[in-house]
Picture 1 (tube, helix red, strand yellow):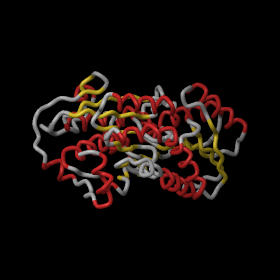
Picture 2 (picture 1 turned 90 degrees about the horizontal axis):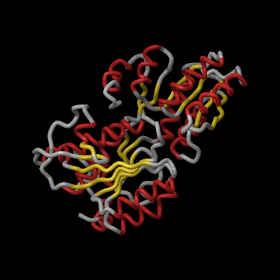
Picture 3 (picture 1 turned 180 degrees about the vertical axis):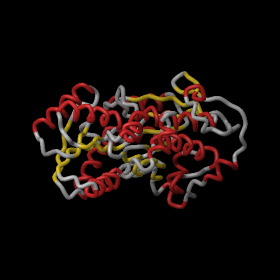
Length: 340
């Protein structure tokens, strides 16, 4: 099924159903990602069976920055779906929007069967995504780009509404009695991160300002946040936009002598432990494993069963949800495996 048939039938396309996956016969196969088999890398046990559908290749292209462990979770989800679906998964990433566009072009040149892409800086990807459509390659979005995926002609989107997530966090700050907060943005120009802080500002009843840091240089992040806390002793909450930056913020609080509390978006193994110890107040979880899994599975379902997640009209939301001291133990079990 090509993209032209999708364009003609999009409005009336059926929504994805879990039963569709079960309806396709399961048998043995293997999958690869970047030259390594996905079932060797992802040991979560999430893949219960393997499809005997024709082998297909999916390119997953993200804006991951070096050292950002959030994307390891996304990739594990994608690998689990690839192992189940007889998909060869080719992963590539670059935080520079122009370079990310080049990676998408590489996937087009390789004539992959589908592309899953993040849209942190959608304008930079508009041209190359148009080329993918002309080449008849189905494209889905994940993680970043909820406001742009349909405008760019993508079939499906898997992620959270970052504005809604930010608004929810702002309300939570109100409940916790926060008065003076700082939203730490680790990547300038990333629309999703900006939307998070704008969402917090919309509902938070106290004072909040943005603090930009260089997310590719963690020592610099630490020193910038530490300096801010020393400069303004009234700051009572730091809001970070990723788990690694939350852990660094905790260190900055300790070094500065501040009494500020730390809340964050996103999870990893270390962060769940910090919530259990009380070093982190709470985290907003968007379930990145699910984003990677559904993106690959959505392309497989489209190719093999003509399904459109969300009917091709609505995004499939994977968050937001809160993880705090009341439920962190249940989540920590999966975080220890690198899947939450």
